[in-house]
Length: 563
Image 1: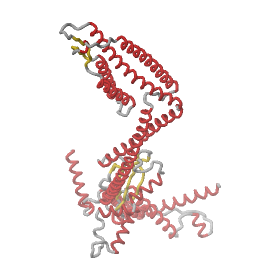
Image 2: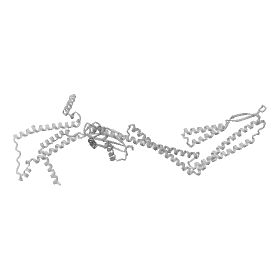
Image 3: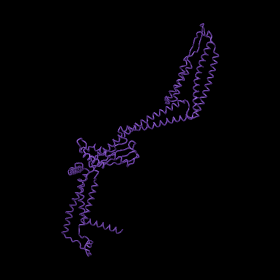
Image 4: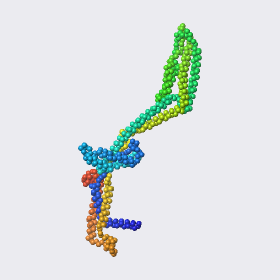
């Protein structure tokens, strides 16, 4: 291990010694090579410009799935943005096919098609698509293109992004329109289902109108209440019938004198007034149910109130507006007898009791029918209750489904309106490529680095080539190795005054101007490379010397103005 390290150190010392002994050769060849590289770079190197355009892509259902992997999505975007079809369309829109050979019909000839295919393939190889930002909600995609033509490097990425955005937006709008039509059909179907379910529920509740379908206890309470109402109405009816029979028994018979033309006194019927008041109250309840509680015409309460209103109207129409309050008979033209007044009062009471009896009969029939429905419902309560629960569930499910489809339809309509209005919610051109003035390749560090490394490599090669061709014996080790005899002593170099003068002249008269000239040339060529890279598309491209002089004069003028 120690021997290997010592051998490496010995080799490095020998290399350094060789370079030091021939430093002028090394430095001269290195500088000349660097100057040659810097001088030939603007002539043989190609400036490449890179244009970069960015677009914002929101992860939506209509655009793409958020669960798609980055690699697969990047491959798909590479195909959509920089595929053969996209590149062909972009080159045709930029007018790159105008100078290609064409046939008599104006279409590309076979040679022109071949050239165009080669052009498309070359462009595809220099287009890059990458993700600058990748997130579940928003992606920022960068499209870059490198070309020797600065204008093409600017325009092509912009055109690719513009075409992609336009095409995708058209696809999004078409997809949203299809989704909207589908959702609209679903909403219509759900509305029909809701209406049918509501109709079935209304018919069911109308069939059992006035009956509670909540719990058996509440239904039993209604049956008990209806039974009590029937008993109360029956008692009232018995009482009214007894009163009517009594009135008929005590009514005096009509005599011959009583049959003379009586004088009749009529007044407004109090029963008609009572019925009119009940009709007004029923109409008020009906109006409150429609306005305050927003009940529809098919609601059971509305239907019951409508039936009550119609019944009261019929009773009101059947009840006379006026009733006879008194009758007087005066055959001799004298005052009415008291017996006639008593008989008329009894007749009025009999008419009132008959009307009350008819009303009690109607109320009794209604309560008996309600009791019969309640008893029938109690017998089949479980079946009816389950049927009612099922109808309610179907109504709620139909409403929930309709609201869900309606909400999705609203979102789709909003998205479609935004896309149609060019408010690009899914895709947006975030940043377009700018005009290119400085090449992306080669860069100044790369050119200078290549020139310096080439100079060092050539200088080192020249030194070692000179070492291999030089057979001079420079050290005692070389003498021992060459002659195979021991060295007894060493005589130093004998220099004369003429040799010293010659060396001095070479040092200050030849080498110093050479080094200065090479340094100036190195500086000039470095400036030339800088100007070629940064201002190659300006007047410097055709007249570099005039451009440099004009810039120098401008700098001198600025210095003079400052002083």
